[in-house]
Length: 365
Image (cartoon, rainbow, N blue to C red; front, side, top):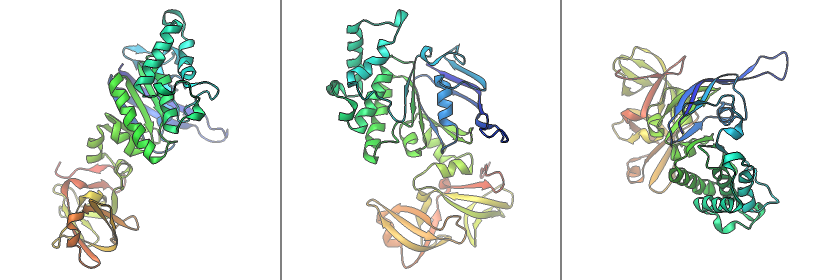
């Protein structure tokens, strides 16, 4: 099911009557392809969950339209939208077994969608097998791990054969190992079922690892959309560059002068065709090459060995943050001598941004 959002806006009145209105989502326009998993990504307060709730029907847009396929569902109630919704806190009924939790939405179906008891049980086992919890059907939520409870919540959402599956921060209550395992499961389930899925998260690693496309938001406004790797490799602005990446991008104050990118007294890259100006400069951690003839000189503070990679923690006069983090292959650490590190910067890992607008300045275009 294709989902189309046209100029979607949500404005909340300020609780203090003297204050101004709060624009949670501002002119959100985007088409979600049928059968794809889309990640809505951004920091707290960016409008991603509000967007999800408008798609679900739990919140009504202040303006704009929502289409499922060719049908305008903007005014349609949630129970008539054929959606499955999974909340952050799972929202399972603690006094019910896994089977009863999955059956609950099926028991409320009416009209032509109404099922017999045998049909409901058959469907419950069908979705339980998809999420691999069919052996726990007689247990109650308190007898399950966090990851298993999350699977029950997904199974309950899938039981109605939804055309659109909505996931609101579904992994935030899990520990690191379970998050990794469960996000792999979510991708497997989505691929297996082919259901159009919208996944809300503030964790960029989660979004990038399982999404077909990501939508990066800030203060209710779309900043950039695209395939995760494409957005990472070509950030539209400084916010996107800083938000995506672990470790985060290194940011410097610098300038373009005479077709060169300069940080402090170091000339670090070419900037052919770019006018002389003050700029923000971003360099990905993996963009540093240890090179005795390199033009970027840093003062080494620490070396962190991470197995196949080594993280060099250093300082530079132009750095916005107290330290710079450079990731290099462990095989090349022998090139590091003393407390000074010289680097050559990879051309595809350095970005420059307008000092005022923070929009990307593209070199050579």
